Image (cartoon, rainbow, N blue to C red; front, side):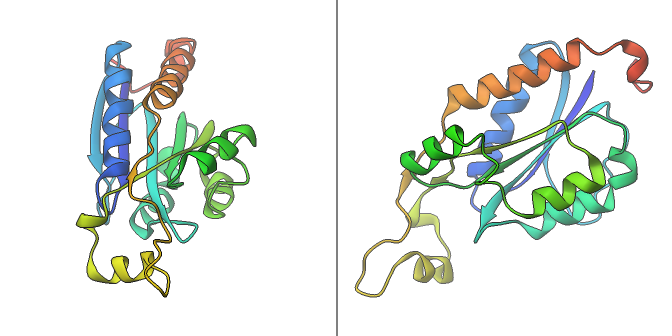
Length: 184
């Protein structure tokens, strides 16, 4: 099974999640390619897809949205999973898990789901290294008076990410081979 894991990441945390998903899928016996989204990307030629994006101000990054919309025909009828990387604290991440992530999902997920019918969507906590932020992002992060609006740290739950990737691998293993005509 050839799987593409592609992602849009601003500072690298979402890329780390994508790499971890790819390693788990590889370990489960799938041939996995992982790469960042690029404008005009052609996603054809794979049997399954995992597509993710960092979330800023409640939205997926534009590159990820464009790639999904631009490849809707190639993704139609294929197994596709989406993930978002965003909450930056343990309490938000736990709340998102308890609510089955629907309320934490960016609103574009519903729109994209109408176009490509993904098999699932997950929201994972992100990470923030304030020292790496661009000047404008640093200014947005801090409230007047100097109080940080977003916490600094790595809030990614690697075991949760591994578990979700393994669920994907198991679901793909249950599919009959004829469901993936490109699989060799």
